[in-house]
Length: 332
Ligand SMILES: C[S@@+](CC[C@H](N)C(=O)[O-])C[C@H]1O[C@@H](n2cnc3c(N)ncnc32)[C@H](O)[C@@H]1O
Image (tube, rainbow, N blue to C red; front, side):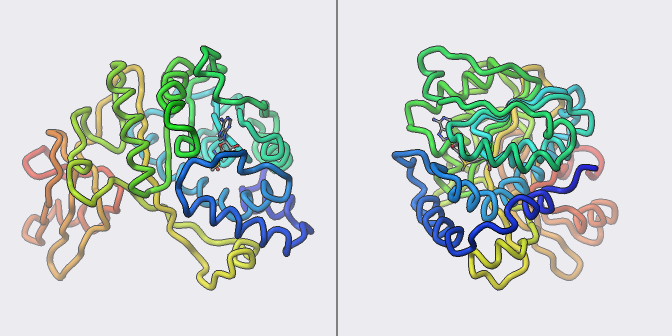
């Protein structure tokens, strides 16, 4: 019987030398904190791949899972049978898709790290069938710049990879994703740098005639990008495993994984009516939302108790959820 990712991770990582993992985790924290594209393979040995799986994989899995909830809400996951997870590493995005798409038939994970792929394959043995039978392929994405094609699928994911690529490889990789599947999901850390990479991918997809499904309720210029010091990002909460807490010396039992993303499709689907861009601010009798709107603007929406139906909906709405601004039909 398949087990959830955290149990599958525990089963595989149990018995790994904790001190070696702690050292490798500290090195990974440094690399990721700098945010700059690394000059060499980051997951270049089995211990570093294991540290990645223990310390980052649950978080990237949580971010992709959060995004897939939005994809599902907008009916984009129906018809997904074949996943291509590009730069898939130890398989976090593949686990998220397998969780969100019960009928997933086949998974292909491509990555430049043999150690990450080998570990991902071991972890996936405990997962659902689409994962335990997945194909794990060693591939250097640099080859797409000279015309190499990616395997085809119904959905192509690129999770926490774009920022690791040299700047001149990013557009060719986005184009290759587009050629590989009719649905493309790009997720990056929810930092100004991650957002900039996502924004460039979004522009590339729109320029090719694709349609953005989420987070944007429109295919116009991004209103957040024009605001000084602001960047569009969201948050996914996850419980930390005991191993994660040991490796990071962390006291808190949970963390919030900030992420930026774009989900785009070749054939249009109805967009969300609006998107909540911040944690809603709740005061007695009112909820204040910051909303990205279908007309390409971002604006506050203050919902008071007087507006009973919208108020009830506003009290339940979360950062990253769809939201129907006033004067745009019924409450979401
Ligand atoms: C931060 S990890 C993300 C792994 C996984 N997608 C996730 O969400 O947890 C970045 C991955 O991109 C892969 N990668 C970076 N540059 C690559 C390249 N040129 N070709 C293939 N894979 C690459 C790395 O090996 C690594 O597994």
